[in-house]
Amino acid sequence: MIIELTVNGEPVTARITNPGSLLDLLRDELGLPGSKNACEQGECGSCSVIFDGELVCSCLVMAADAADSSVVTVEGVSPDDGLHPIQEAMHRAGAVQCGFCTPGIVVAAVDLFSRNSRPSSTQIKEALAGNICRCTGYGAIIRALETVAMGAET
Amino acid sequence: MHPNSIDEALAEMGDGAIPLAGGTDLMVEVNFGHVRPERVIGLRRVADLHEWDGPKIGAGVTWRRIETHGPKALAEAARTVGSPQIRNAGTIGGNLGTASPAGDGHPFLAAVDASIELTSAASRRTVAWREFFTGVKETVRRPDELITAVHLPAELPEKQCFGKIGIRNAMVIATVCAVVTRADDGKTTVALGSVAPTPVRATGAETMMSSIANPTSSDLAEFQRLVSDEVRPITDHRSTEEYRRHGAGVLTRRLLERCLA
Image (tube, rainbow over all chains, first blue to last red; front, top):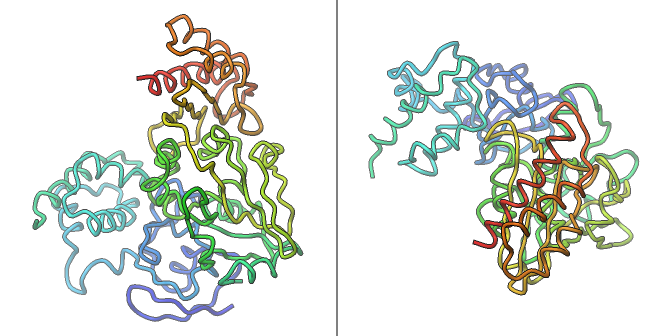
């Protein structure tokens, strides 16, 4: 089955193997390995993408259901040269250990800040409740995002 | 298949077709190789299922919307469903379709005596929650039917509280979840999940508490004991029968206290 969708602003045509997930499509067919494949059950958040404007786990979206949708992956959040301010802040704060959860956390944080430019610590923690860091580096991640919230223009 | 209307979706039902709402249950089964569906009917684009008109909640309404717009105890339950990612995808109708004993939305529907609308190409019926659930992940839905809406009563109890016991604060499947409601005239309802194959009401505790205008601490203790006695939990990988029985009593007593406060 061939589907058309928009990924990171670019129209793409992809062959899908039923009943695979959007995550498989992104990684295996479209060469976008930023979204990670870990738990495959929506627990860990490492495959988070923005799907038609909503933060979701791409492992739980059936690829066929992504036809005609618009998807933003971690590859799509940063400018061509350099990093997104959230990535910058995480880099500065040492909020990356093994790095496996990082893309999902960046996407979840981009989604949070798109709706709330000055989230409180509690709001940051709630927004990241679906992203697990097995290095348990949450403190640095939350501190990094707090610096983004503090620096946000009102 | 991507129908755009309920009628288009219904025309495709049957012949082993599996309706797909948010995917948060079905795709786990697919990813782990437990299910290999031949025909899937994606309901994401069926606009009618997203409609929410007062007491009628379309089956495709997500937990995210319920979290921000639902009646108090249902919104509280929605806030504990999975994570933001899961709440953006998962729907109230999908929760009912899966009919897990631990479904976070079920106790509210049981507590307020909601009913579930089932539609096939030939007919439409509305069944009470009590008839809808028939066992662990089993319901009266026929293969040719879609869950199209949830009907709440027009009037909801003034006081209503949801609570959940689990091993983490976020992203957790309930060990026990419950809703307690109390109306101005004292009528009390108590509904629980994860303590039986289907959601249940603790009718003995309800009857006892509904007749007491100002419960004393010994009334509350008796209420807690009745709830613990009435539930029929099992021991499984998530908890033990004893812990669930105890937790059911403590949780519903605290929810009742919140309603009385």
